[in-house]
Image (cartoon, rainbow, N blue to C red):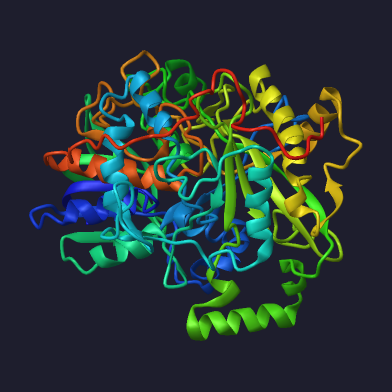
Length: 561
């Protein structure tokens, strides 16, 4: 195997890597090697949507990273799981499908990612998608990735939450992935025929039937092999054996926002001071590797529910057994959804042009590990500030590829981020206290009505906020001194080496990251293959015309201020 060569070597069979493996092997002239540290994704806990909290918290399927003590979160260590299985984080995530706001991608272009504005990205969102409902200018039905609306909001709490948002003075939006993100409406998920639509299911499995794709699992890549300033292959370890494998054309890192910068650094590509401190020989001083790290934080508001209609009534072992058996036999029912079936996107204040706060509504009250928060019925809404200004880093601490890197997000370092979370608390309370939820809303359990002042909110947030598991931007795309890849995804200063995953986002979008990661991989695949790129689509984007003067479109029916 030491002498084996492939045209392309892809490191990481995750959200981006599986897409690339599929698209690059469409050309039968390309030989492709895909290397993954984890193994099979065949577990029922991965494939059954309702079981989403299990793989995320399982060492077998996820790197269970932790941050350094976060200085602005009372020095807490924050959980940062990343997929370690075929499908990567698309096999362990919450399956929420949010593309992001059109302006997020226009922002990428403003940061130096030329032709990555919304008009250029939209065709690739469409190319990836198999939308369960009618195709239109924004949505498509012919792609590999299944997207639907779960059980279509059968529980009345979903609709009540949307109605409450409208009563609070916000827009209703029929499709936040279409013309208008801002507002309240149904939420979409990567589920197809009742099964998780991971990139392993949607892209990799069909590609594995091709004889020009080789997939190696349970293999840890040590570094990229360089000949001067050219990538010529990778070194990996499998079952105790070290193997060097060569690339005729290119090496593509798709190891994710932690793995890709870490691998670059292990290969001697990164900030000179970081490499020297880790005793890694400097092959190419590239200051931005591991810098610009961003993530979303969130917490949940929890309320008791006055009617016995929440999912808390389905958490006993017998109910779970019935749900599981029905799913196994029919792929339908409560097992076929992630339960986040309604949502909202709003602006935190006037003068913010597009939404920076996001809601996931859940008709149950439970903890992040999937256990009940309290006895009885309840509901909760996850809320977070999605356009943070705080920046962190990924740093290799040694030349040992098995040693985890240092991860520090500097969450809430910037005052604007702290202000954003104060808005989260006050605006959410106002929404939940609208008439539409009167018949359901019981006592506020978390944060609790005693949390009112800026100081009280800040204290609560520091203690209870958690990662939304959206790390990104640590190998940013652009042309400035901190850019790691150019707009063609090529690593600056190194031939034959690209990075394609969420680490190359210049800034974090307003939403969950799986959809834009898949889009980036779809577009990058065409770039790598030298194909003519899909023509830009100038679809209409609706933004509140009075965004400079008002935080929302109308006066709330019931004000809590």
